Image (cartoon, rainbow, N blue to C red):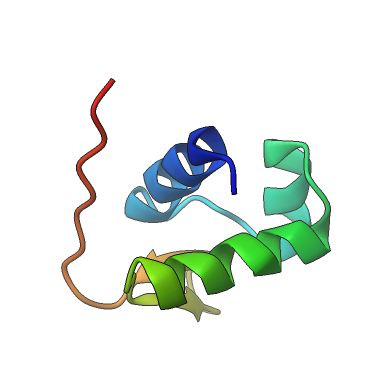
Length: 71
């Protein structure tokens, strides 16, 4: 897993602007399958409460979630 992609993904999820998995893959320059792998990793390893909101057409956090990344 690339931490840079996780940071980008977290930012898009927080702002609820991921779009569909296909759009998200295009935005992150990765495959759609890789999007699903990152989402799964974040859910399992980082306990991120990620769900897909069909109304917003975006992945969102369904509970408060905040990651702290040190630059």
